[in-house]
Image (cartoon, rainbow, N blue to C red; front, side, top):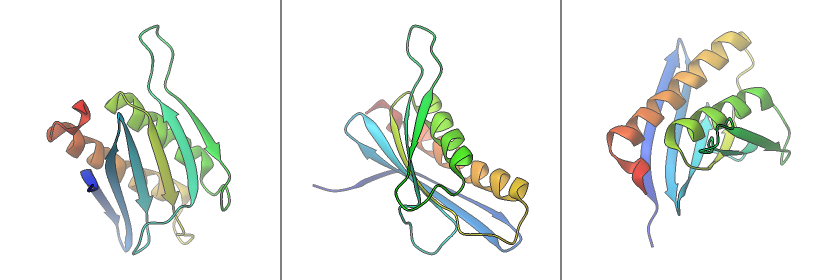
Length: 127
């Protein structure tokens, strides 16, 4: 059994670097996002895609090691699940404190969007 990295994205603002990686699971994805050298658990969010009946994508944050950036984690999960049309379990570990929240949000969303585009361009969202 192997791990299938289905998409990667990176975004940089000055010396603030955010990495996002999607791992394909059985009919779902694991999304890891961090501004550190290694991925970690951080805030855990489970998101489901919109249904055929017109409901919006939903997400639920779970407190594992703290709820730092929970609104951002929810937005990341909903966005990924909506575009990939599959449930997404997100692990978001953001430690940066020196930049304004707007910079952190914009850079993080850019990295995640690049990773989503990578998944879609490779056709990995069909699994």
